[in-house]
Length: 246
Image (cartoon, rainbow, N blue to C red):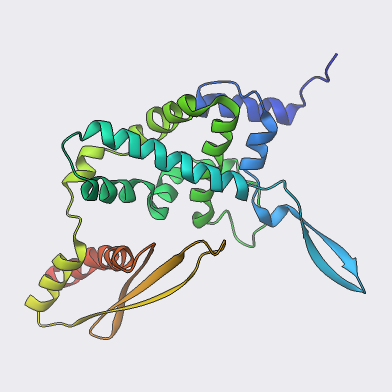
């Protein structure tokens, strides 16, 4: 007979069932999804020096898979929801949903930090929660398949917390809107953009710093210079308007 589940297994199973709506089959997949690489490295000694020895029991591979699954889920959803919209519109809306900051906010709303296992100096960092969400969807995909992963992400995670119609109504071209507002107030805005290869060397990541009157007003990153500038402008826009209307 198989060993009875441990108390910690029963607790994880119960928590996952509340979050996902089903009992997971392959519990180890979910453990891996919640394990940050900071705890999945064990030191080994060679010539009196210690080196980190990576293991496979962390969530980076599941994060890679989940990222692709989420993008497909959202692409399919938007394709069906907006049958008359063109590619540019769909791409722009999708980037608002699957972007790093959006997934971090969603992971916070889902309270995924309670599951994360990490060895960090501070409490669970906000910027790893989006990665954890991606890894979780990767685990769901491997455990239950695409249809289940799609239903879980859309109906239990995204749509209860994000109003897509409101998202579409928002002004997307923050850069043009910001520049117009800055010029009206006699100020000057400068976008400074740099790029560097991604961790896996497969593409470049662009980072933009926006300065208004030589003061840093916002920063943003993306897979293109345009996307990085838009994100920097979006971060700066609200603060700039508030400062000049108060």
